Image (cartoon, rainbow, N blue to C red; front, side):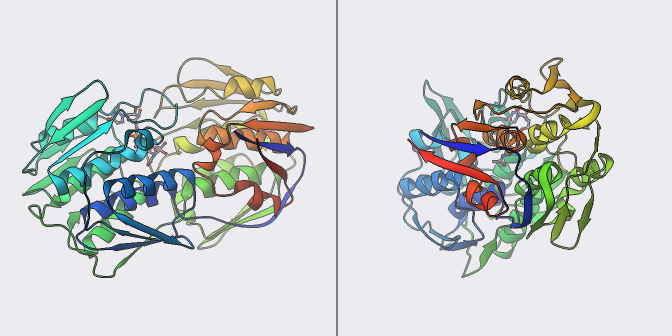
Length: 422
Ligand code: UD1
């Protein structure tokens, strides 16, 4: 089990490049199953969840190759419609592969999905959607088996907005027979980017990026890439994570290869906290101010404040003067990092499953801590970077799931993080 040793108190100065979006690349990899021919995906981050997705595709019979972040997937020889349970359980987005697989093969089976421990994370919306398209669903002790020799378009309303639910049903509907309308759909930028590429390859999707998506299915005919390339958009969550680190330690920190338009609410939040910030078309520069102001945060679906940045911004609020309310409305159980930050000296009162009061400013002390999930893992790394003394962060597999070689990239800016493989 690898861990990080972190020397706290170092400033971060210089420029850091944002990688391709984890939550974009994973869906493009899944989308490859909708194709007849090879697809090429560029700007794919080399992170653990992507490695798992590539393994999953190989186990299904796809040929997958990678060079310098350019991944090619050839789905011509798909031999099975069952997801490898050991791999699938390791990341929640494995469920996204089921939509295209079902659409392509007429059946699919998968285990109960795994991934981050951030609340209940049920899959009822996916199941309701597939059922509405005519799929039979059998729940077994180990997971689910779906069968739909002919998927039919449908008019489907999500009871709750779901990002992967929207992407999965959008992909399933792409090869179904007839028209599908997805209402109360998620509108994250990764969804419109995916729809744009699928449309270039023969899909007929309208309205992606809004809350109503209309898909005219191909009636079972797979898509054809004919050499076209899917460009992964910049990771807005990685960029937002660097923004929080820059507000804590930037001297200044310039974040490049990002899309500031995708981060408007976090940027406005930082401005309200008094963080000096400049931005251009594809970069943002932040410095750590002498004094941070408290501010309330409420997570929301895009374009609202991203739940994936909630823990990092809560950490930032521990350094702000006064009291801030953090309200998590997307996942219940996503405040479980608070106890560890309190052990480091923070004053966070968890009021209930969704709300926490952060009182600042509190200096943090170094400690040994365990990453519970990708984002809280990065918040702990941030906490160790501002704490006095030497911290140890365990279970860094969780951080590696979403951030590529994070220690090397931050060390270039002045951090002192050592990876120890034990
Ligand atoms: C995706 C992102 C994740 C991000 C989240 C919210 C990927 C791989 N992951 O996760 O990084 O934190 O969006 O922006 O893209 N829900 C149900 N039933 C379902 C599905 C979801 O009740 O069948 C609930 C969830 O428990 C949660 C809410 O819907 O409370 C939103 O979750 P959802 O948007 O589905 O998150 P993911 O797509 O899993």
